[in-house]
Length: 321
Image (cartoon, rainbow, N blue to C red; front, side):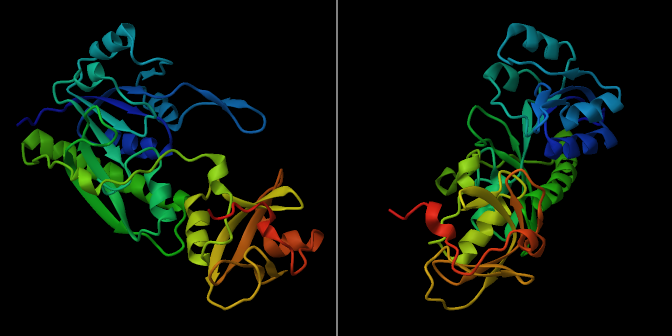
């Protein structure tokens, strides 16, 4: 048990990580250094941008390390020079070698965006929505060499809203993660937390998403497609094709109705939205994004690009096996 402030090294890169770093900075312990992925070129203009955690650390006057390789003696010794008591990891984006897991006396803990052992992997928040989960949350774990397989220190749950997207849920779970992280660290310092092993037989995976994962199979039910669209919003986004041009779809609504139309057939496209027949029921889309254009309402798009009833969105659909 200790009441003295811990010396912490934080490892994380995107907005989810930045929210957890912000919580640490407002807490009683001392963040000695922040490790993030290197600056990367992003967007159409390929403008180099700094990771959100780097921006936050620099504003707070905290040293930032951005190694291209983390399995080097130089990087290991660099971290060791800060004499950390604990390493905190949140969406860093790389698997840590044993040398880093064992570097700090209190080891490494991770803020994971799911209720483990469910949804281990790189995209837990997106996959939870895609799979239609309503109860979601975060888990603080003691890291080991496996992929999110370490003993659980603390969990926190919330209920996902019916229209939740990956983007909106990410913000909520990032805030929840930061609060839960502070509670877990406090418990570790006071000796009031007992690590609980995961039930590996109940584990499910949440692998990294690819752009092609967004191709809509209209043979699926409207509810399945609705979950897919929300789970891939804002990235990589779900899509179909209109005249061989990619059309990203957003703001879906399940319409419970019977239709004899083939899945992927447009039933109407007007101020009400874009209604498409599915394997079961139909899906009304309220927003879309044509290739190279901004996101807009269906009504705005149809003013310049009418989509006649009977248009076949299923032409490029993956056929069931």
